[in-house]
Amino acid sequence: MSERSLIVPRRRLDRRRLRLGAAPRWISRLPALLWPLALPAIVLLGWQVATTRGWLAPQILPAPAAVVATLIDLARDGDITSNLAISLWRIVSGFAIGAGAGIVFGVALGVSPRLERFLGPSFRAVAQVPSLGWLPFLILIFGIGETLNYVIIAKACFVPVVLNTAGGIRNIPRQYLEVADAFRLTRTTRIFRLILPAALPQVFSGIRLALSHAWIALLVVEMLADTEGVGYMMTWGRTLFQIDVVLAGMVLIGIIGFVMDAGLRRAEKRLRRWVPADG
Amino acid sequence: MIRIRQTLLAAAVAIGSVGVAAAAELPPVIHFAGVGSGFGLPFGQNTFAVAQVKGVMEAEFAGTDVRLDWGYFTGTGPAINEALANGQADFAQYGSIPNIIGYANGLPTRILLSYGGTNIFAVARKDLPIQSIKDLRGRKIAVQKATIIHWALLKALQANGLTERDVTIVDLKNPDTFAALAAGSIDAAFGASYILPLRDQGIVKVIYSTKDGGAQATGFGAIVVTDSFQKRYPEATQRVVDGLVKAGRFIGEDENREEVLRIWAKSGVPYEIIAEDFAGKPLRAQTNPLIDDFYLAQFRDAIEFEKQQKLIRRDVDLTAWLEPRYLADALKRLDLENFWPHRSADGLRQSAAN
Image (tube, rainbow over the protein chains, first blue to last red):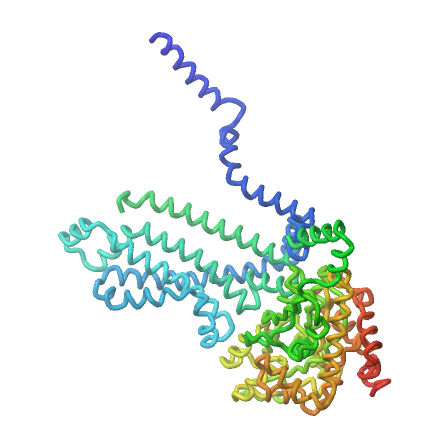
């Protein structure tokens, strides 16, 4: 017993020394931070080996350094910034339209069982057709132009937002609604003070899904029916048989998608903090 | 992976007996790639189509185990460049613009012969007051960029005192062009004869054709072979070129005209459209395979165009790219040296014409 009581403080001391010592905390977390980078490093190494050994012709797989050089070139010429600005503007506009309308429609479906029975099945059937499937038809209606981009992106956002909003509302615990009934809340108060906050986490999952759908839809429409934007930059690279431009586009898309998703994850975490745990 | 397989194969040949080496003179399969018309049919146009359908190429390899594989790519030039790069194609027949793009980016091809010219048309929406190229000022024109049609568009503008800054050029693929014209989101478009059915549907009117623009305005391309194939199989390469020249002779003989047009219609482009495309022109001149001064001048012009348009990042040494000896050999052996007209650089004068 006495021995143990001696040991414990020493351990505490050690721990304290670790914390106060020369090595800051992030060093001890370094392995954990580096772990997710291991796979990209292996892929990069394999890529480099494949190109230096000439396993694939440089016209098919250019060296990583060549792709980085192309990225820098494109950034310097302003190709990346102008195309990116165009693509991001399309995302923001299409997303605002699609997600905004999606929340309204989703709340309507979630709140009114009658509307759900009337519109729900048709909506779910139509939603099965992916954005790409709509493209030939929408090109005929809207022609080639910005309207087409906005419509396709808005459609891509609309569906997951509607489904998640309606689902989130349907999942609200019955007791909440019973309390609202007991208080005889008006419809407006019910929607804004109870239903929306309670459904918020799932609405937000819908929004996150919508943004990733929007990003995919944007690239598809840009690759097929646009003359500007990051997706078009890649198609153009393919046309010019400059695969380094295509790969540079892929790197860019990956980075932006990752940043957008990480941003939304963080926002979601923050939101969850002020939503009741069982909401 | 293809490289590894080829290296292994080469090693096996080197180690093997003389008999193995002799067998390696002919490849087991030869892949041909041409431009598809977008109808999903396993037939194309120009020289390849006749060499395939008339069995001319098969005859060249009769009695051997060589399999011939004809592919027509709807993705046109860019897809053909990719096929040449990954070993899906050994011989390819396609427009000079993607041709040059491939070569300038290090695709190891050699030019064997020409397949002749392609007529290019400009169409405008029927409801607009556009009667000629000059009326295109300030208009929105669709074209698939980095193709021979893009080149022809800029040539036509230039001949009419316009530059690309006077118009808005929209880069669209063919089906999208049709849709955009129908929806009214563009004013005009350039294309080969595949665009003419749109006129028959009453959507557009034809305002220009390279048939009125002279030889220099006409689209053109090359039949190429991958350098590795012609180095490894010179015998097979010669047989292929022989077959193509014989197909060219068949096309050029007036009595076959009707049959040739029918063969090209197998690509899915209606017969009437093809007949109109070539109306009033002898096929022999239209499908001249010669690498003469005119052809070289056209190719130099296209290279210059690509540099100006920043489609290529490097200069192209045309002389090093050409491999005319197979064609010269075939013409001599088949006694066809004077079958086709040899044209001067401006395309106006012809010598040794038949």
